[in-house]
Image 1 (cartoon, rainbow, N blue to C red):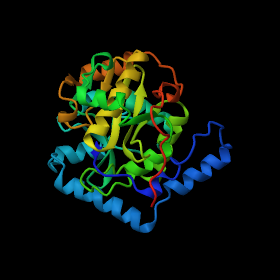
Image 2 (image 1 turned 135 degrees about the horizontal axis):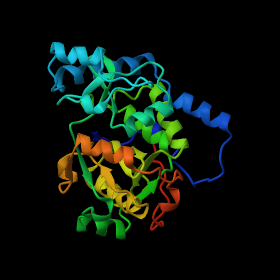
Image 3 (image 1 turned 90 degrees about the horizontal axis):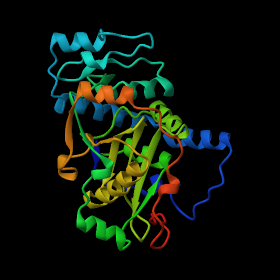
Image 4 (image 1 turned 60 degrees about the vertical axis):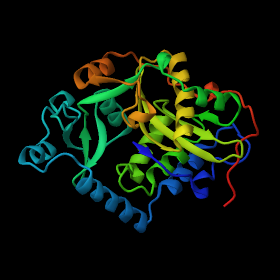
Length: 308
């Protein structure tokens, strides 16, 4: 999912200043996240309104009896309460998400080809019929973007400010592309996956310190599933260049870029659902280290937050 806007000063408050690699106490991290993710009544209503707009204006799934039955009576539930993604129809809908979702269950869902989405007033699992992927080691790089990186027009950072990136994605004002499933509780699940080394993010800064693009995704074995990103098109491409180089170093097989417009990844390949799920299930567990050490060397002044 692509969101196109600039970051607000409030969302970049943890991106300012010199990096400090000393870990904060656990209680301080939890409290900071609780405050960052908390929704006011106005913000919650805005998110729910955006969710209903998406359901009414963007869903290509007709409200047929078959679709409704699959939403409330999902096929092939296993012992963990997850539906069988292989049984999803062309619309990809697999059933509602249970209320007791945990980080482990969310990760298991990704490993089985399921994605959390919002449909007709409910959080639901979806498994797209096809995925668009690139092979990180063979991902094309536009010359203009490569030159911009070499000249220091952008600096890409990996796994530095995951909480801030997550909040900015969740609070997007683009109602028709907003990831409305990112409620405060669900953001907590993704940060837990980040702490476990299963979720990762990238950020793109200008020499003046403005964050002009960012995104996050989930690492499932040797497949990386990009979930949400936002920003200026060329800056996103710069972030993808560094992200794909990193995935190649780490021996990833595929980078799922279904969340991006085709114009940003024109040479992506289409993979059928069944083949994609087999690749997810058969891929071995990957290293769960943070990717901060793969951040390219600094070629300009350190990024700072833009003055409000």
